[in-house]
Length: 85
Image (cartoon, rainbow, N blue to C red; front, top):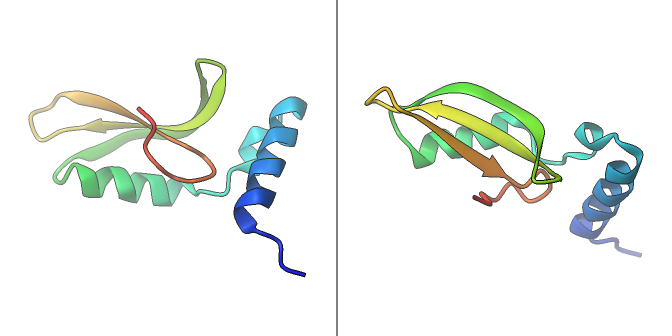
Protein backbone atom coordinates (compact mmCIF):
# COMPACT_ATOMS: atom_id res chain seq x y z
CA UNK A 1 0.00 0.00 0.00
CA UNK A 2 1.34 3.41 -0.94
CA UNK A 3 0.62 6.50 1.15
CA UNK A 4 0.86 9.94 -0.42
CA UNK A 5 3.60 11.86 1.47
CA UNK A 6 1.75 15.16 1.02
CA UNK A 7 -1.37 13.71 2.65
CA UNK A 8 0.64 12.49 5.63
CA UNK A 9 2.43 15.83 5.98
CA UNK A 10 -0.84 17.78 5.81
CA UNK A 11 -2.45 15.47 8.37
CA UNK A 12 0.50 15.77 10.75
CA UNK A 13 0.44 19.56 10.35
CA UNK A 14 -3.29 19.71 11.11
CA UNK A 15 -2.97 17.55 14.22
CA UNK A 16 0.15 19.36 15.37
CA UNK A 17 -1.53 22.74 14.93
CA UNK A 18 -4.35 21.63 17.20
CA UNK A 19 -1.83 20.35 19.76
CA UNK A 20 0.40 23.42 19.46
CA UNK A 21 3.46 21.57 18.16
CA UNK A 22 3.64 22.93 14.65
CA UNK A 23 7.42 23.33 14.43
CA UNK A 24 7.84 19.56 14.69
CA UNK A 25 5.35 19.08 11.82
CA UNK A 26 7.08 21.29 9.27
CA UNK A 27 8.31 19.13 6.42
CA UNK A 28 10.18 21.98 4.74
CA UNK A 29 13.46 22.90 6.38
CA UNK A 30 14.74 26.33 7.29
CA UNK A 31 17.64 25.73 4.93
CA UNK A 32 15.38 25.05 1.96
CA UNK A 33 13.21 28.15 2.46
CA UNK A 34 16.25 30.40 2.89
CA UNK A 35 17.79 28.90 -0.25
CA UNK A 36 14.52 29.54 -2.13
CA UNK A 37 14.32 33.14 -0.86
CA UNK A 38 17.94 33.87 -1.77
CA UNK A 39 17.55 32.38 -5.25
CA UNK A 40 14.51 34.62 -5.83
CA UNK A 41 16.45 37.68 -4.56
CA UNK A 42 20.12 37.32 -5.57
CA UNK A 43 22.59 39.43 -3.61
CA UNK A 44 20.33 39.59 -0.54
CA UNK A 45 21.29 38.35 2.90
CA UNK A 46 19.11 36.50 5.41
CA UNK A 47 18.31 38.53 8.52
CA UNK A 48 15.86 36.00 10.02
CA UNK A 49 14.22 32.70 9.11
CA UNK A 50 11.87 30.97 11.54
CA UNK A 51 8.44 29.41 11.94
CA UNK A 52 5.88 31.93 13.15
CA UNK A 53 2.12 32.33 13.31
CA UNK A 54 0.91 34.82 10.72
CA UNK A 55 -2.81 35.60 10.68
CA UNK A 56 -3.40 32.48 12.78
CA UNK A 57 -1.50 30.18 10.42
CA UNK A 58 2.00 28.75 10.92
CA UNK A 59 4.47 29.54 8.16
CA UNK A 60 8.14 30.11 7.58
CA UNK A 61 8.94 33.82 7.78
CA UNK A 62 12.14 34.84 6.02
CA UNK A 63 13.42 38.40 6.35
CA UNK A 64 16.00 39.41 3.73
CA UNK A 65 18.10 42.52 3.41
CA UNK A 66 18.45 43.52 -0.23
CA UNK A 67 21.52 44.94 -1.94
CA UNK A 68 19.92 48.36 -1.49
CA UNK A 69 19.76 47.83 2.30
CA UNK A 70 15.96 47.53 2.39
CA UNK A 71 14.36 44.65 4.28
CA UNK A 72 11.73 42.40 2.74
CA UNK A 73 9.63 39.78 4.46
CA UNK A 74 8.68 36.58 2.65
CA UNK A 75 6.27 33.86 3.84
CA UNK A 76 6.49 30.16 2.94
CA UNK A 77 4.13 27.25 3.57
CA UNK A 78 5.82 24.84 6.05
CA UNK A 79 4.54 21.75 4.21
CA UNK A 80 4.89 22.68 0.53
CA UNK A 81 7.69 25.26 0.72
CA UNK A 82 5.82 27.52 -1.70
CA UNK A 83 5.82 31.27 -1.13
CA UNK A 84 2.39 32.35 0.10
CA UNK A 85 2.66 36.14 0.38
